[in-house]
Image (cartoon, rainbow, N blue to C red; front, side):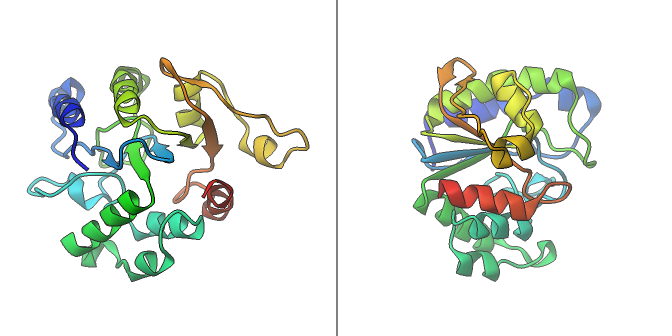
Length: 215
């Protein structure tokens, strides 16, 4: 997947004034997948665990390169092939072959994967409100270009960034009166589904269960 409008957008991302001012040497993480996807998967921000964030890496940059746990959750959720997910190594053994495998899975399954904030940090805290607000404008452009049929918002902060509303995931998914979500996403109307964060401080089993309902 390469699109002229997306390329120009990501060139602007790479000129981020916040990273320049702070001396952040990690590379920005772009989005990747197919245009007009059935699902656009949006997370909040990348971290240094992504092998494509490090200086000297010259291949494609997109979320969770080198983080096999994420791809296994997508597989458990029925979004990508289980055999591919099981074949992925730990970060230390990850190479371009594995990156190409997950790229093919995103394209084959009509998915697009990105973050609200493309800046990558060497810590796991959320980015500042100023950074989120600034890069949400770029995300709005990205959504318009990608044109997804549906968006999966991983985590409450992503959902609130997209809709301006808070959501309690346990109540939404397991309450007796599940709310039907069809919010305005930054100047366009696209159905948005809130989902638990899939790894780390999130709930991978619950996230996979939700994804199975969308696959």
